[in-house]
Image (tube, rainbow, N blue to C red):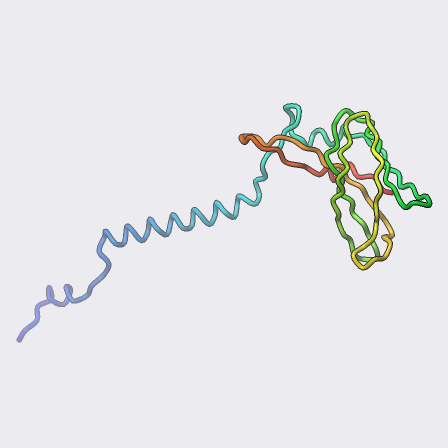
Length: 159
């Protein structure tokens, strides 16, 4: 029995063009989804306050922080001298090569002062060597009907 060249070519099978096209489309969709999820981490939600990006208002935040100790304990007094409300405070404490950040609920309206008891201790119970207080502002998320806080890391005050 003699086998012709045409029969030999037909024995070699490959993917049909339809299946190959479907696989290519699926590969492109998976790659696009991976790139989108990766890039989404670089694009943060824009938060606005008074119609401006909240980062721009961090420069106009003007506040004074003072730690007061008396026989009843330690207090933190915040005086907001600016025209932007402070939503809360992020307090970063340093000891040796370690640092810890704590959130303190100090809502201070513009032009007002608040005095609250506070305990500034590291997780191991020791007192920190240095304390920096950062204000957080509340603004609206662009395109959504929600609010989000933004910490002004360039407006910190050292105690």
